[in-house]
Length: 122
Image (cartoon, rainbow, N blue to C red; front, side):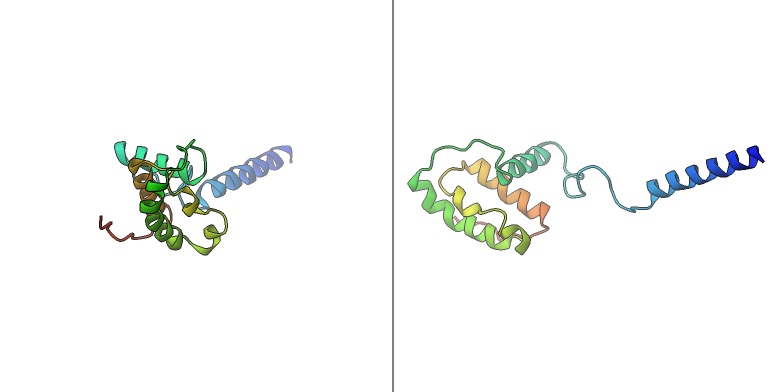
């Protein structure tokens, strides 16, 4: 009887652990968006993510840059899902980003939220 109880317990534990491994059907560890990126794209994505999440110290605001960046950041803000629009205000970053940073932010948003951004016309 004891052997039957132990084998039943092992079966239940084995089944539940296997079920939890295969049950999700998705990828683990940080989302699908960033997994396919390599090298420079991965660096650009991570920089954009850090800027988006407010984890990067930005330059003091420069008014001449603010005017040129405002339209790009307005467009980017408008392309966010409604749930994100209330959480972040990308327009507040106008004048504080280098070209590399704003490009990385656009790249991150396009990948993370699956948004096709229009080509910039400078």
